[in-house]
Picture 1: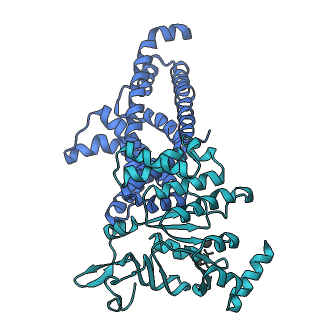
Picture 2: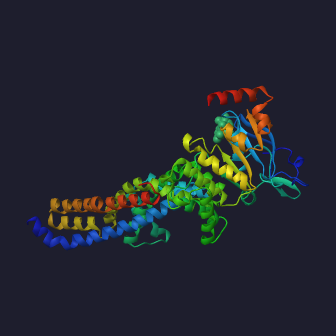
Picture 3: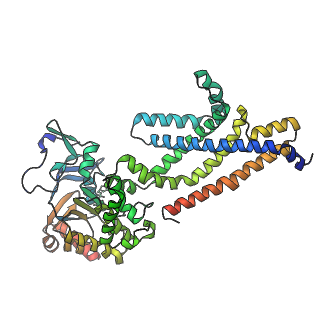
Length: 272
Length: 221
Ligand SMILES: Nc1ncnc2c1ncn2[C@@H]1O[C@H](COP(=O)(O)OP(=O)(O)O)[C@@H](O)[C@H]1O
Ligand SMILES: [Mg+2]
């Protein structure tokens, strides 16, 4: 439960409000502090990449924003409105499920292990959200889904079940499925980590295309430093549940200031 | 009396009994599936009351014997103003009893659906009932089909007890024939064969077929 709720604004005002703001966000599992008073803003249209050692809290950042995890302190804002909380009688209280649903609709997520619905075809996976959640007519949902499957290069496999698709193909369908909900913020959690090396570019290619052609806000956790450097507006290096260092890809990868960043990058680059 | 003569004389009654057994079996299966779904999902609910009701149901029907439950429903419920004819009391008792085991199968199967499926459905902002109906239950269904195959055989065997409240099922007819003819080997031997044939050549292949169909539908086989 967030303490001193009265010290957080009911909403963010003024020009250039961030698309996403983590304000003083703490996450614990029992005694383990996974994220410690995190402050992070992501601007509209920005591509922010999160890197860092295993267990540093990268996935947790995305999962909290997707509302898959609750938070123990702080407030998360989306488009200036609180996500984890809502206004009641001039103050903030923990969000109820209908508030969560309303704000969550702005966010989409792709997972390391794709998590496609195995009992639906590629097209069925993409149509599920638009039909069941947005209430679109089937025809319209199908058009939208086909367009996206085409964009990710999966139109030929529209009638296949996930079990008939390779990892790279499944992940591309998962990206189309998330985009079919027209989110404003897309979260990618190590979407290439479970893939064979030769198909990684299928997926990174799609994400690159998104960055080039869409005005989406994106938060991406990745271990692919080259890819991160190529497409990010900003890179955050996480260490031990906090942002150790952040900056443009050029600065962070070529001139890291902190020793831990240097050590991490050295280790990763030598491992590759 | 040869066995052929035995069948000639009593075949009609054996067939009548078998038909009643099959009716009892289908109706009890229907009750068991409905109860298993309802109480299995209630058992998983966030709501404490619903959970408590489900636990009470499961504990009661699993913790006491089917025969006692059958007698309860037929002989004791009327004292509380609920009178059921013996046919209804029969399949209801068997169905509710087996439904308690089925509820645990439903619960286990729902929990066995990978966590990532719940999370993907939440990330699509699906409402809880849609998540359950569209994403979780279809997958849980495939997971629980093999154990349900065993349970349904148990239901068939369980229906033999309804003879004890005088439902004229196969077991009832066979006992009557035995009492009047003392041809125990012929009577009970035939009953065993008929129960076995129903289980082995109808129920089991039916369940296998359903498993294959469902696996095909999720693109597995
Ligand atoms: N459900 C959980 N219960 C307990 N500890 C968890 C849970 N989820 C994550 N953690 C712990 O939180 C820390 C951060 O996890 P995570 O955000 O997944 O790290 P990363 O993605 O950077 O590897 C790790 O130490 C992990 O073990
Ligand atoms: Mg992770």
